[in-house]
View (cartoon, rainbow, N blue to C red):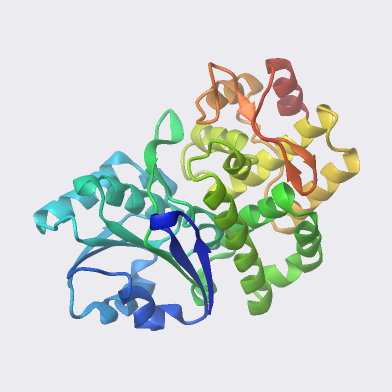
Length: 357
């Protein structure tokens, strides 16, 4: 088992990465400080792993919230289901919430924990690759709105993140590839050597080679932990983690939540950002080609949906957390391994990229 630390002074917490961690009760129970525990999961994950968690909590008063599975359920209605359960069971502010699932469950569960009685403890147990390498770490929580993704939420750090690589054995291939999009992102924004390692090892990752997986997950979490420790509330370098996300969130919102998985939308968005970087004189054509090819090798889409016009895209991108004073700001790449901070883009440059990729 590897243990990383997200260093945030009195809100620091560990990230555990290893095999058979869900069968290791102390990893979970050491972070539960009271008898009251609510487990938030979904209809796909709960039948697979809920019983394993419950057997470690026989001495606790446990309530369960099992949500429908899918991005389209990342809503205020689902959030209220959690609040209803907490209130009906008369849970106090000493309760602990365990988020057992992918990014949707982790985001909703974390937001519920941030809000209930102005904050209760919570533990992230991510069960998708995307959640393991990205959304479970860093304290971003929230829900979607019909007009914009993740526009309602809070920064709220967990007590711990428990990453058991064995759960990836039950993850379908599409979800697995979606997680690789976020892994590729870390090489693009921070480390050319890791990007090169991914080019050499993407086939091993697709075969779910355990050693390659643990290396990629550990590297991704370590990188994010460093960035979050430097910039918890995204006022600077943490914004680089949003490479491709302004375009990607527009795809998710415009096509309807759930039509594209988050990682699929981010892959397309990153290819758009790479093309825009080339048009701004930052990347060369060969670098863009390498980026697109790696996403393709990871079995991810690389072209924007034809159903969205450039004008629709830009309208959707205007609803984004990075925008300032009405200016659409995006993360670009100076090179493979180095991202820019958000840059305000003119409409013509965006249209050229959106109409030509």
